[in-house]
Image 1 (cartoon, each protein chain N blue to C red):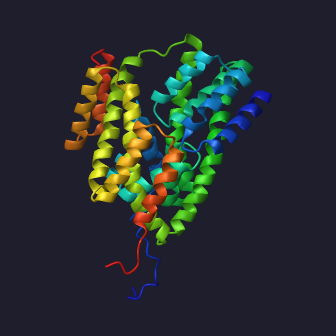
Image 2: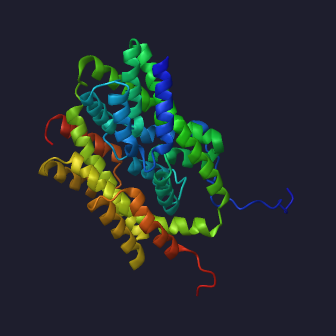
Image 3: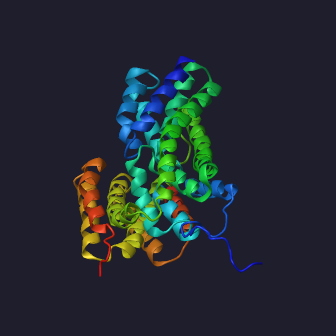
Length: 195
Length: 181
C-alpha cells in the first residue's frame, strides 16, 4: 500500500519467480536423461541458459570452468552450483537428486545385465548414432557461445590457446589453466575510470 | 562389511582428488578395484567404463558399477545394489559439499572485481576447452565418414534451426539402430 518500500537488496542474480524444488529435480532429471550418448554440458546449457534462463551465458561458462577446477564431476558440480544459486542447500540437494537418481537406477540395470549375461541388449547401434549427435550438440554449443563472447582479438586468442593446448597438444587441464587463467583474469579485470 | 567400508573410504578420498573431473582419478580407481581389492577383472573394468560413458547422466557413475561389482562378490544382487549406492554417495558427497561452500562464497561476491573478471575472462577460455572436448568426443564416437557426416548434419541443424535437440539425438539413435551409421 505505502509507496515507500523497505530498501531491498538488489537481486539481479535471482530468477524472477521462485523455482520449486520439484521443478529443480525434474529439470536436472530431464538434463541427465537427455544426455543419452553424451553431451551433458551441452544439454545443461540448452536447458539452464536457453530454455529456463536461470543463468546468463557468461555466468554459465565461467561456472563451468570453476566446476572443472574444483574436485568432483563437472556436471555434479554444476547441479550443485545451479541448485544452490536458485534455492540454497535444499536446491542443491534437489538438483543432485534429479541429476543422479534415475541414471543410477538405469546404470545398475545395465550393470545387472552386464554382470549376469556379459552383454547389454540392443543398445550398441543406438549409442553409435546418438553419440554422433551428442558430439554435434557440443560443437553447436561452441558455435553458439563463441558467437557471443569471441568478439575481440583477446578472447579469440584465449579461445584458440585453450583449444590448441588442451585439445590438440593434449596438455593436462591444470597446466592449461595455470597458464591461461591468470592471463584471462588480467585481461578481464575491471579497470576503474577506464574511458 | 569390510568391502562396504573399503568402498566408502576409497571413493570418498577419490572424490576430493578428482580435480578436473572424474576421469582424473580413473587410473587410481582401476588400480584399486582390479589390483588392490580384486573386485573385478581388467576387462570388466574396461567394459563398465564404456557402459558408464554412454549411459545417461554424469560419466562419474562408473563408480556405481565398481560398487555393484564389489557388492556382487559379497553376496547376491541386493548386496551389489547396496555396494553401488554406497560407492555413488561416497563419490558425490565430499566434492559436492566443497562445491556448495564455494558457491555460497561466490553468490556473496556478487559485485566483487574477482567475480566480474572471472565471468568475463573465463568465458572465451571455456569455449576453447569445450571445443577441445568435442574433438576428443568425436575421436571416440565418429568411427568413419558416415558418422562424421551425421555429426556435421546434426551440428548444422542445431545451429541453424530451433529443432528440439532430443528429436535429433533420437533420430540419430534410430539411424544407428538400423546400422546406417
